[in-house]
Amino acid sequence: MISIYDQHTGLAQNLPTDLRDLIEGHLITAKENGLSDLTHIAVIDEGDTEEVIVQELGFSPLHNPLTGKRFGEPDFEPNWDWLEVHPDWFELIYTVGDSGFAFVLFVSRTDGLVSRLCGHFGRGRAGN
Image 1 (cartoon, helix red, strand yellow):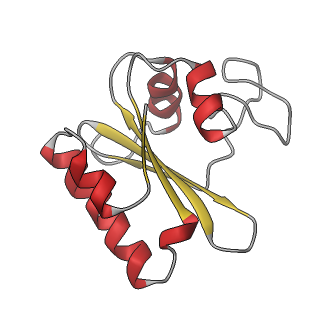
Image 2: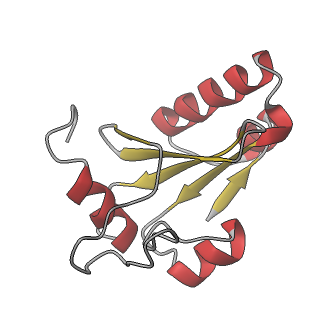
């Protein structure tokens, strides 16, 4: 799992070009809107366990803290604010509070559990 907080750390990562372009777009927008210090971008890849994700972010996309339900349980609904499907990546945005803080997660469209979650709820969206 990779966390990116600014263009310098984003550019320092060995990332695929399409992902780098998506991340750079978010970093530029955050800077233009004064949200650089309020944006946490993370890349979740196939090998990242839920434990690693929770250690890095403080929460799991596989669990809805409002309902207590986990992905795979009946009536589970994810608690992200945005899901966009790209050819090789899912993009999730979680806003936190009223300050403008947001987590922007890029999830590899491989066979990891978070990818399956995104694929399940991203059916019928462009690129899927």
